[in-house]
Length: 77
Image (cartoon, rainbow, N blue to C red):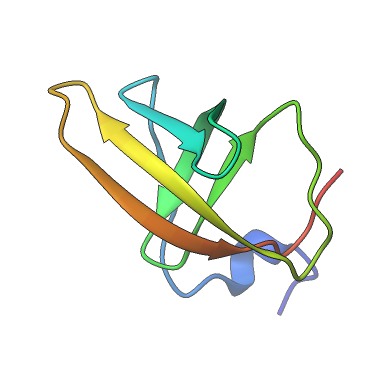
């Protein structure tokens, strides 16, 4: 067993390579989705969120199809 958090994930993360756009629904602020999996995602945004807070995000594919999801902040920098 290692101390690397990536080794403890239940689902592998997929690098999005810019094919997935995102926004913070309540703020209308864009975000960059770096990686996504069945259990979470890694994003970059100008906003900071308290660990444990729940936020609504709009994720949009290149063809315009989108979905709104709720996400709980697990860690931040």
